[in-house]
Image (cartoon, rainbow, N blue to C red):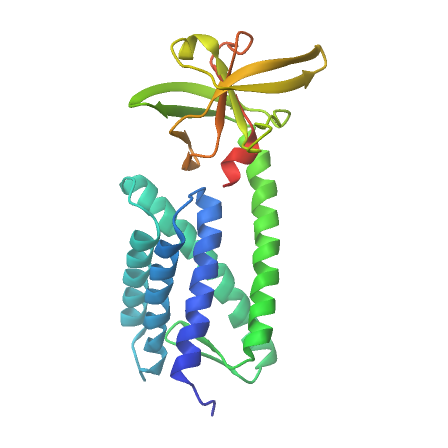
Amino acid sequence: MTVIYVDVLFIVNFFITFFLLLVTAKLSKRSEKIWRLVAASFIGGTYSLIILIDDLSFALSFIGKLAAAFIMILVAFKFKGIKAYIKETAIFFFVNFLFVGIIVGLWLIFKPKGIVINNSTVYFNVSAKLLLITALVAYIISAIIIRIYNNKTAVKELYSVTVFKNGNEVRFFAFADSGNNLKEPFSNYPVIVADKKLFENCECQRLIPFSTIGGEGVLSAFRPDKVEISSSFGSVAVEEVYIAISDNVKKGEYQGILNPKILNV
């Protein structure tokens, strides 16, 4: 019989939920405040106490986990419509199933001491140091894989870009180009290159140097209040970015060029 300590149960599941929400945020390309993820992780840690209930039916366990997941996603990510909400929840479940599947596989094969699975909840009676190192390594590997995936998928479609400046909005389509590595030299913020005709009345405060096969030069740029970038993968809001204007951008269906790294915030 394994002794379950309530404080360890809560802290471990809080930490794991936080990790799973971070992966969900990366996959859904959402950038949310840490306090939201912490609050949702607190719910996850509290829900893990269900492991202490004996003989809970599978139906009740499943309904409870489903309800807890919907609540956690609602707390972790700002609501941006039912479609985005369902997508985020589905990604969260996918990440959970992957994680629990690995744990269950190890449990069935090795029957390790210190791991208890009950009511679809996992309890780890291992040292905090080992758990922290393992989770950190897993997160780093996941982040690298997700970044590579995002960079590859980013260049396959057009993005809807909305620029907010002084109460005005300008919307256009942009192409993600891995060759666009422009950054504002003082802040090191990434740069979106847009057709000059879109921002004829905007005052530019910065000059962005650039270098291409055809030569070198500078582009006038300004810092917007906020930029929202949307695609079939979801949407992301960016504030630490500059808009550079150019006469040589418009090519058919797009009027801007993105740096794919902007999408990995």
